[in-house]
Amino acid sequence: MVKTKKITAELPAVLLSKATAYTGASITETLRQGLERLATSKAYEDFLALEGKVKFSIDYKTLREDRT
Image (tube, rainbow, N blue to C red; front, top):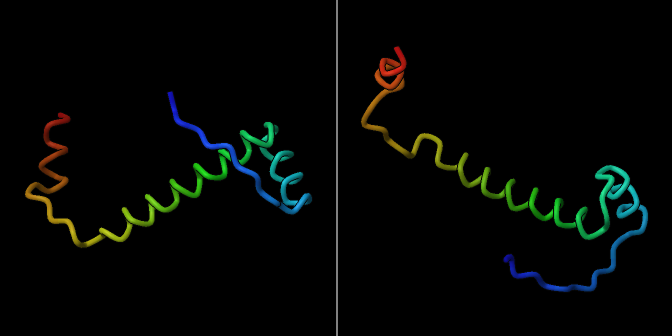
């Protein structure tokens, strides 16, 4: 089971209304989705920062030979 934390937050009513209308979900689920997207975005940025820094010992052409 995922550990949860209950919070109190002051949010702009218009922003919350637009977000819940977009998701079609409850406030809690809308906030959860937003937080998940932020976390995913950060992980993706970290991944992109590795570009050119990771060296592979096998090239993509060799990998594709296994598919035939």
